[in-house]
Image (cartoon, rainbow, N blue to C red; front, side):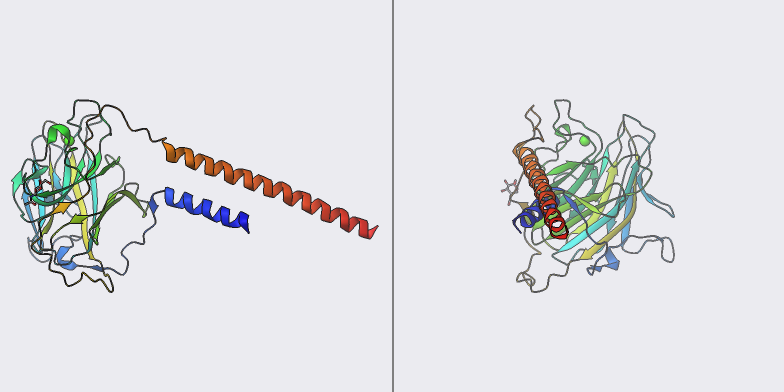
Length: 328
Ligand SMILES: *[C@@H]1O[C@H](CO)[C@@H](O)[C@H](O)[C@H]1NC(C)=O
Ligand SMILES: [Ca+2]
């Protein structure tokens, strides 16, 4: 019994450590048509219902290209209906690709903001925005020593007073982030931005495996209702095709949510948790205490397993001997 409970604990630990979330796709949560951008994009006529485009954006039957793989372009798409629900999950399918092997940029951003259709320097959108940006930065502007590789996904919450600093790749205003090698793949990638009970969880499916992998989770994120979703991209000296394939927003059904009727339309965006600035030179080594702990746990598990097998074999042999003795 002890062995089994130890084994169960060991397994649970391993499962918790592997940050892979096997989420069912498109669950019972309700997809909102007025926030969706899915193929075929056109209804009747030249307009796409509920969506508007700016800059270099072009629509083809198979993708919406925010920028082509050409220098100094910027483009955006914006949903024209504000998000009324407090809890939601936004899923975007995208593809970033181009001729550049080592040099490419700049990346794109997904927005949940008060204003829409404003062009500017933050991946094609305005600076000092009010709301949230999820930035998929493919080009490292930072010349100093780096703590992370690019492409890099990060989140920024802004009440309209903070500047996005490209020279530091936004690292001193980001909530959290993760590396994600989503560029020049043969398939399309997915990102999920889940905002539920003031917890922001960003997950990706870069390999198109139909399973989410958590990029980061940040608690204490306050976002008002009534903001708009959008996506924008820029190229500069370096370029890439930044393609959006689909956008889906699911309203999350929280039965018995005590905050369901709270008016959240007038709060200012804020976040209680910020990553410490990433300007220090040393890389945090992944093989920290937790790594040692995992190793010890595995070692212990193996020892227990081997001991059990040995005891089992001895017991079996004893039984056999007894049986033999009885027969002869
Ligand atoms: C806006 O955010 C900044 C930076 O987090 C903070 O210092 C400031 O107090 C905020 N302003 C308001 C009005 O909440
Ligand atoms: Ca950058």
